Image 1: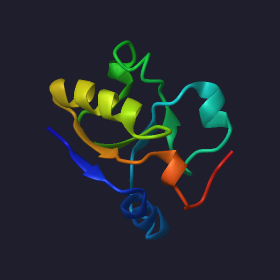
Image 2 (image 1 turned 120 degrees about the horizontal axis):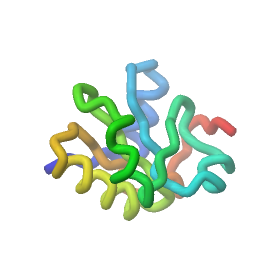
Image 3 (image 1 turned 30 degrees about the vertical axis):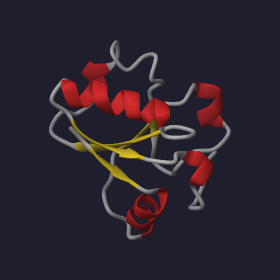
Amino acid sequence: MYEELTPEDVERLVRNHTPLSIIDVREPFEFAGGHIPGAINISVNEIQNRIGEINKEQEHIMVCQSGNRSDVASAILSANGFKVKNMAGGMMNWHGPIER
């Protein structure tokens, strides 16, 4: 199981310089178009194959465009013992800083 955060919750954490692990599960071309500063890109389609790259001791915030793909990725990681939170509403509701 995992909890959901709003984009405003995540923006507050970013603005407060809270140490975060943000995994953006959109496709690379979407990620390149703009993402939350410091986020890493692991497409939801690759998450199973790249699970070994993700630190199991750290909590991760999962992000996508609308919150659906990140929900799928959150369920996969959670089922594998990872600590995750899903950013509900996704980047289409993000009003914080963007990195390109």
